[in-house]
Structures are given as C-alpha cells and as structure tokens.
Image 1: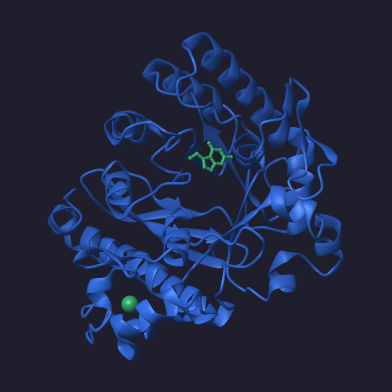
Image 2: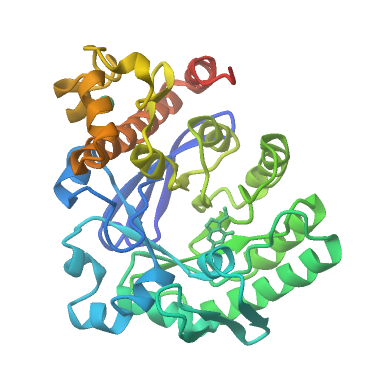
Length: 372
Ligand code: PRF
Ligand code: ZN
C-alpha cells in the first residue's frame, strides 16, 4: 500500500526521471502534463474526454473558485472532485500568481495580499493561512503555498525581500496544515527571479520546511527563452531528488522537454487549451494555424500521426470551417486534439526515459518545432 506523498523514481536518463507520485485519488506517472481547469472545468471538455485521453491529474485555481462559486459552497457539495465529477487527482494553485497576474490594484503586506474581484470589484484578502483553508475546502490532492511571483525586470533588492517573504509565507502555510494532518499534499514554491544566487537561497530556505514536493515559480513571466532555460538548468538539478519537482505555468512542447531534461516531473500551462480556442494547433509536424486559407479545401487530417478523436474523424477543411464560423464544436475538437497531443508527448517521454532514449525523442521534437 502506498500513502499519499510517496514518490518512487523508477528510472533516470541523464537528469530526466521516470517516477510515480501517490495521492489520495491515485497514482500519477511522471513526467506529466496537467491540463488547466481554472473554474473546475477544462474548458469545453468533459471528465470522460479527459479520462479517454489519459489525463492523470488536472489543475484548479483557488483564486477563481474562491470568488465563484465559493470554496465553502464547494465544500458543502463534498469538495471539488465530487462537485465536478472528476475522480482522479487535482492540484490547486494557491491564488498568489492569479492575484499578481490578473490585478493591477493589490496591496501586499507581510500579512498577505489584498485584491479586488475580477468579477464584481469587491475587496478580498488572502493570507497564507486563508489560501490553505480554501484549498482544504476544495479538497485538492496537492495544495500550493501562497507565494509572490516576482515580475520580470524586478531588481535584486526587491526580489531578495520578496523571496524572504515567500519563505515566511510558506512556513505559515505548512504550520497551518502540518505534514500528516490530512491526506492533502503541500508543495513549496521556489522564487528568486533571474538571480541564480537568490534562486539557491530560496530553495535552501524552503527545503528546511517539510514539503511533499517543490515547484519552480516565477518563470515564463516575460523573459526570453534563453533566460528561462538558464535559471531552469541551474535550479532544477539542485532540488531534492527524492521529491517531485513542478515547473509552474510552462510551456511550449520544447519548454517542457527542456524541463524534463533538467529533472522536472510535473508541468501545467494554459497554452494547449488556450491556443486551441484561437486556432493554433500542435502537431507532430509543428504548429498549424487552422484559420489559414490554404486549409480551406484540405481533406487530410490535422495530424496523420495523431490517434485522437479529432484527427481520426475530421479534415482540416472542416476544422477550418468550424473555426471561421465560430462554432462551439471548434473549441471542443481543437482542445481535445491539443491536450491529447501534450499528453501523448508525455507518454512518449516516460517510455523514452525508461528506454534510455530521451535525448533522441527531444531532438525529434526540436526538429519539428525549430523556430522557422
Ligand atoms: N506561482 C504560483 N503559480 C504560478 C506561478 C508562480 O510563480 C507561475 C509562474 N509561471 C505560474 N503559476 N503560485
Ligand atoms: Zn489529434
């Protein structure tokens, strides 16, 4: 029997790891991509769709679900799993990032962060303890600590003070939900902007607090790919080997492969689902922009190598038509394909690590996704 939080590494290929993380709603095979279900739904898909494409875990957002329909309302319905009829694991982000990215008006103090609702402008306050209470009400399998995601271009002094506060907030989160007080796991979040010494300092402080896993926050916030990879390559291999590592809000297929190569186990990003809704589709041959006129009479499947429902049943000409007509089915078929593509890539990644062929796989994707 495994207990929530158990993390077993089965194979490695360079820094890349093939592992299993146990949660209260079952095991997750890593490396894994987590589809984003901000409002308790992965936009346009049903739980059945997600199970069909082998989604192992989805992400929910504290910020959105607290504002609407309210975490207490969700708790009265037995938690987010029951409310949304999703039986597999759920990870919830703490709300920190959403407050910082969706809000110009916010007040940050040692106590927490004050912000206005994006729905009706009403005032709200998240303390580290409050962020955990909300995630307890939602009943997620993995809770994230409240952190400050430092914007791109902040100076070293600000970034340093911010990471120190993120550490104090992380400690308060853990003290509010000590290890073993329930079957929800809690991950700390490494910040420190684009300063390697500050990243190391953040990690050193956080590893003294007993978290079940560690995330890298504060990347993909407007920096160049080179700057992001520079920090990623530096910090990921320094993170505890015996715990899961999660790169938050990243990224393109190549970013994810770069993360895996640095030893990251978990990823989430709105890119596949959001891009699907604006007609940008990921295929084995690179990106396809389905709105282009060249596809108007193209009777071939979107991706001949893809086994998803969309590719098995529809032509590019039809997908383009649905997109141009803004038909609801366009969102659904495109989202289905893009998430299937990401999840299938992760399946290939896991097999390649087991076979010791991860670098070859990575090079194949790099060839397909080379900047044109
Ligand atoms: N912190 C939190 N959530 C996040 C981020 C972060 O830094 C990011 C950064 N890419 C995405 N989501 N809590
Ligand atoms: Zn497909």
